[in-house]
Length: 439
Image (cartoon, rainbow, N blue to C red; front, side):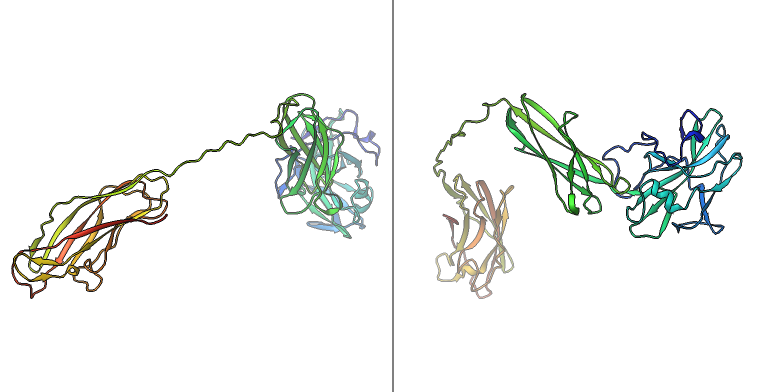
């Protein structure tokens, strides 16, 4: 139950008088987001109804028509001596005025009349077609001691230029804001140096909320609040300060919107390291230090230089080329390529031959290859021209910037023997060539 203790009877409050002080909730800065509805004074929002022409208003009503009111519930138990409608500014704001008669039969749903038209009563809280906003009307149920429980309530809003008001039981929607605090110099300064603090405020819906920013250091105000986003455009708030003691300062900028019924407050923070004057680097510092690294290292390729016997099966012979090892220790990383080219196979003691192009291969990695290192493409046997006998085919290569360290590859060999080849022993040789790709 939402109970507000006010000692003295409600009847002693003069109509039209502003009750000093804020009652109700105080919104925590930074916790409200776009689309957040603020809670109000009344614990039973929507249980207060307005009537015009004997009809219950559901969404809107005339600002100038005669208006009565009724509740859908009785006053809470323990607060059933009398009741009266009170007008508040934005939810959680100050009570502005008593705006209705004082019914005494409040143990069941009750009704009454307003002191004036809705437009005239809203003007007490400064809300009109020329000063749009939202107020809350809440029924204050009193007990014999004068304590008041705010129960049935409703929210009334007036838009710019409107001739009607709108009703809501949920309270106005408040858009979240973000405050960003920066300093110049940024991050680090020295004692005695003037620092400029700047705060920019944006809203979650993309609009530019006006208001003020209170700059603080360690929770203590720096000067007075400074206007932000004046003139309807994005304009940061700024102030200056000078720090006399070395250390880390916790800075903050607390934004308070002009229209608290539309925008939420928010706080931006920043940290500033203040060093004792004279401890920053001297003029001419830092001192450049240079070094020249010479090009070093070599590229070498070794081949398992043993005879590779091919095993005959029909008109095809197969075998495996011995491992080719590439070692690159150069710190210039130019990349490299290793290729192989086959000479024609000659008959031992005879004159017959088998073209080198009839030999093909499938390169394969031996172990794990380094980054940027790949084996060459497959070369089919019997490709003439273009086989291993015409030009060298790539076995393994590394692109520029890669290939450092050791990498190994071999190849599966396949020889297609022409049907016109006389029987006999044939031998050929493969030349392995390597080269550096880059400079």
